[in-house]
Length: 194
Image 1 (cartoon, helix red, strand yellow):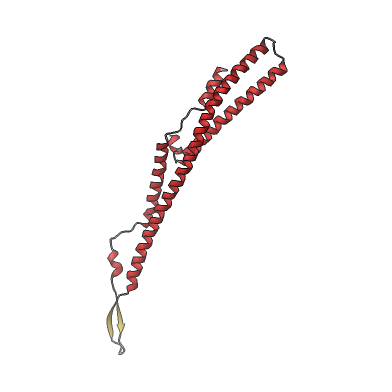
Image 2 (cartoon, helix red, strand yellow):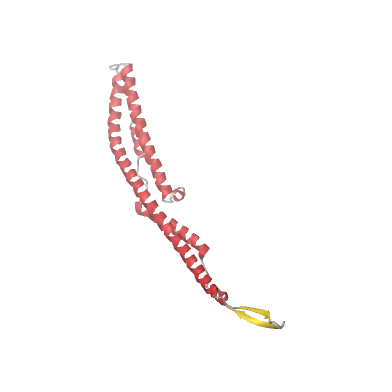
């Protein structure tokens, strides 16, 4: 019976990394994601001046003689400026979207950690109650062995004890699932598997 209580106690050991480490993992994930998304809009200044060269061409006069022409359109300046502003806006949108996603994930993480801590406290109190129930069941077992208890009463007692044991295991499993969800949310599940 004592090994059962020890085994159930091991199920509820807090193995969650510190909150600061989880937050750091979220920050680093979104930083890498932002940098990779910004690569698409990375521009090079090299050769930028080529956009502003005038167009050189050849036209013919009314009498059919060729004449060189140079033309420059102000729409080139406008388009270049508009393209530059569009790229800057897209880069800013990526940065802002990832910042908001980071904040949303951190808020969700706070909720899950609060729930995790509440479940851990509940496990501590339920473990104490379960240890008392285990002692009571042992006493019933001894009374049954000494033939001081009817088999039907012993089976009822055993059933109640096993149901409480199952409820404790279920709570412990719920904590383990929540811990895995927290690790997945903070992008640390692959680090735990190493």
